Figure 1 (cartoon, rainbow, N blue to C red):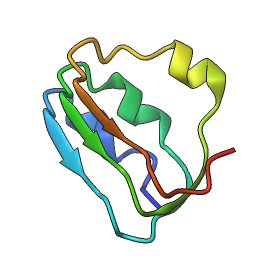
Figure 2: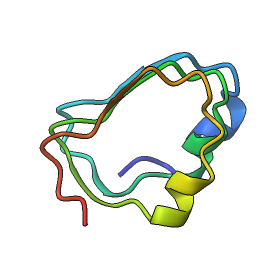
Figure 3: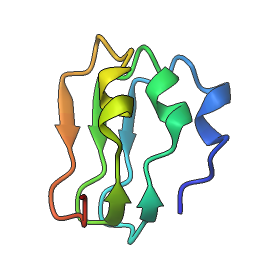
Figure 4: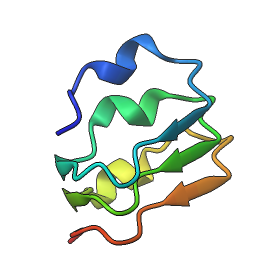
Length: 74
């Protein structure tokens, strides 16, 4: 799993590649506060859940790449 508080101290994070790490569970809410994130690679994991309300609250206006392929998302 991705620790829930990991991203709260990284507001200027621009790229994150955690693809292929067998991560499971939910995508942490703190990740949605990384306003400068341009590339988010979470493909080929076992992530199961991302709530529609979380997607609606995205503040990542600079996001250009979002890779969620090959997960168990509902």
